[in-house]
Amino acid sequence: MPLTLLLVLAVISWQVAAHGPLLDLDTAVRRTVHELHRQLHSSVLDRFGVLLADLGNSVPAIPVLLGAAALAAWRQWRSGLRRWWPPLPTATLAAVLIPLLVVPAKAWFARTGPLGLPLTPGEWGWYPSGHTATSAIAYGVGSLLLGRTLTAAARRLLHAGTALLCLGVGAGLVWSDFHWLLDVTASWCLAAVLLWSLDRWVRLR
Image (cartoon, rainbow, N blue to C red):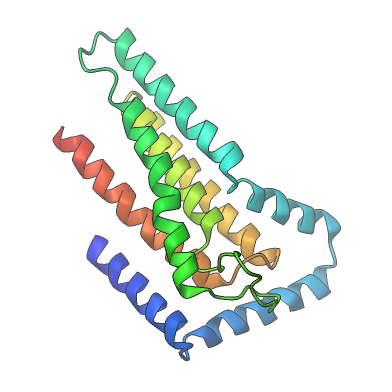
């Protein structure tokens, strides 16, 4: 799976850099979304889309990550586990990795957003989506760390809810014209590879 995700990420990045034909998918999706906006004409749905997109902000995503790690560490300490503290540095590392992975890529690709406005001096581009990466990595890592202290059924429920939340953030970004679909997809691929690697590392530890 990680190799497939990395391949998808590489193809999307190549097409964004080369302004390739795959970007037509972004335009087609944006036209479809605008048509749905026109047909539904729902201010409630529009506000809900913005709300979902805002869940990809550093606040609340990073506090949720750190809170989940603290709860996981506490539960492991309560259970008598000698090495109860690893969730805390793991969450801190994940929080630090988000800007380190996303910001240089944004500056390198310097892609304009769906509204087509040129980038101002000092402004980062839209690719990949920072909100998508922040939500997927922060909520995903928190879910992995906390899930290891839960029963199998509760862990599956937590992981499923986290995945649904992250999908909602991406959908809200596209619906609200904050990002192209490929911006969101690339960040999902990046986050999924990181989460897969973290899960394997935790299992081995």
